[in-house]
Structure formats: C-alpha cells, structure tokens
Length: 459
Ligand SMILES: *Cc1c(COP(=O)(O)O)cnc(C)c1O
Image (cartoon, rainbow, N blue to C red; front, side, top):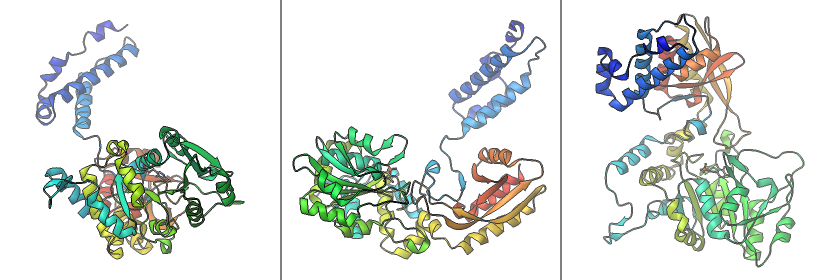
C-alpha cells in the first residue's frame, strides 16, 4: 500500500486556504465548493491506491481538477441545449419549445398572484379548469374539457373514473407501449379496470367489439392511436366512426387516446396524423391528447368530451393528484389562443413552425452555417440533404425533407467532436451519419448558428 503517499494528501481545510479558490467561494455556495474538494480528494485517493511506489503526488493537478469540478457545479443541472438533430419533438430534449408569448405567460403566472382558483366576478372560489375550458370548447366544438399533468395522467384518470371495477374493450393491435413503464395493459391494471383484449395484432373487426360487449361488465370501448408504430401488410382495424356508431347503438361510451394533439390539418406537409377535429366529428365521448407533442404547448394532458363524463372526471379524487400547475395552465391558454388564427399558429408555435418550414428556408440556414464553418482551419463543411423526423413518438413513418451541414475535421473523429460539442458551454446535440457529423438545421434557430460556429472554432 502507498501509505506514505496517502499521508501527503492535503486536508480539506488546507485546500480551502488556496488563493485560487477564493473567488469561486464567493460565487458558489460553500457546500458545493466543499463537495468539489471532497470528490477530487476521493478520486486522488483511489488513484493512489491503484498506483505503484513510483507514484508522485501532483498537487497542482489536484487543484486544477478541483477548479474544473467547481466550474461544473456552477452550472445548473437543467440547461439550454441546441438541438441539431432535426427531430422536432425530441422527447429527451424536452419535446416542444413554447412560443415567446406562451413563455411570458408562464413567467407572469409564476412571479405574481393570479386568479388561478378565484372567480373575480363573484369574489369567491373559482375553478382551475375554467381558464382553458372555454378556448378548448371553442377550438374543438366539444361540450367540456379539462387538463391534467400529461396524457399518461389523462389516461389514468379516464380509466379510473370510467372503468373502475369494470371492463374496457381494446383491440390487440392497439396495446401500445409509449415508453418507460407506460403500457396500456399496465395502466388499466393500475386504474382498477380490467382489460378485455379483442381481435389479433394485425386484424380487429367490428364484430370482435360486438361480441365482447357485456351489458353488465363493459365500461367503455377504447381506441388507442398507435402513435409510435404502424402495422402494415395484411391488416384491418375498426375506424373511429364505426366504433362510435357501435357505442351509440349499445349505449356504451367510446374513449379515444389520441396521443398527439394535432389541432390543424398538416397533411399538405406530409403529416397524416389524425386531428382532434377528426375525433370530435366522429362523435366521440372522450378524447385525450398531449399538450407538448404536435400541439406544441407545455407538458399536459388534455381531455375533451361530453359534459357528463368530464364532470365525472373532474370530481374523481385522482384529478387533484394529477392536476396541472399554474405556469403550465397560463402557457397553455396562450398556446391554444394562438390557434384561433391558423397562420399565426404555424408562424408562432415553434413545433408547427419547424414542421411546416419550407425546405428552401432550411437550406438558406444550412448554407450560412456551411460558409461560416469552412472559414475555420482544419474543417471542411458541406450542405447535405436530410430526412427529419417529428419525434415524441409521433408519426414514426413520416420523414420531412430538410437540410443539414456535415463536417469533417482533419484531426478529430466525428465521435470525438460529438462528445466535445455535448460539453460545450451551450451543449450542442448533433447527428452522426456514415462517419460524418451532421448539424440538421430544421431545429436550429438563426442565433444558434453562431454558437455552433464558436463551438467548432474552439475544438
Ligand atoms: C404520448 C402518448 C401518451 C402519453 O402522453 P404523455 O403526454 O407523454 O404523458 C399516451 N398515449 C399515446 C397514444 C401517446 O402517443
């Protein structure tokens, strides 16, 4: 053992006396400075324990490591990153960006009191849901609406309120796993509802639903949009219209988990997802969708439907546990209001703007970045065509035509550059494709092009 060397390791108090640390102690809470010192001393101890007798303790290196650890701890954990992947609703990067106006509303509601649950005309307690119910009814034509924490919560609440102790009929082709532990059969179980699976993976017929209906046990028929996969080939499923008709005949509610809340038709941009209006026009009883996927708002789960069912949901004890917070509510209201003017929505809601961007516009951005990067020594950049994805588990088979800039560096491999970019002061997340690093421009703002240029310069 290197006991001799171990004894030379400085004490925390000694390190704290170092002049070079003083300025940091002013900027960073002392507890975090102490953590940095402790962690680096532990690393050093570990290194020494593995080394042989020739090991020489390098005090300056220890200090340098401590300083760099302190620098890291100065940064907040959740930070802005640049999304140069071209995937618009990138779940790992926070899904949708809010519009500027929506973000301002979130800020205002966070930094002041508000009439969140206060009826200003009556001077008494008001309802949280009321703030967006009006606009949701107006946009969708549905009788009632409410909003909860996310669409997973909306599903959980709906199943609990509508199906507790009873059966929910779902096609085997629609037993979706959204990600993590969110699987329709598991959510059913959690909600105290039993799942009645019908049909097969590739084919489900209307008669399958009919045969499964039981006057006593059936709570509802449920359709789940297979957002993140497509079954192709020898397939058959029951359309929403047919299902709703069957529900009406048998007086059984029909519930539709839509996943993405696409409020406007984007088929001319190559996106053939069902819209909320399609669901409403079918005569559905309850429809659920996310706020931060194709709708382009904050994380939340929106439930629209017939008033008798929405009332039941609002009164359920889980509604309180899953409720939406004031910042989300404020930014959602602004986002939804933007939809009153469709062109404005496409221009101001970042998710819609990025999806509907013209390839020429993206190409112009790519050309600008290409020029900037080619001015840097050792770098050669080239504009390339890309196929960009929607992301967020939406429209998995849709690829949007876009542009990017691929770069090669005379000394660094793409993997090495990719790693360095991730640790840049504003981390940049790029794509690697066939030995080249690509910045995909659909999801990059104009002012972020400068940051990418700086990052490559500093490689
Ligand atoms: C995304 C999705 C969900 C989950 O929505 P979150 O808002 O992420 O909780 C549920 N159902 C479907 C069909 C989805 O696509």
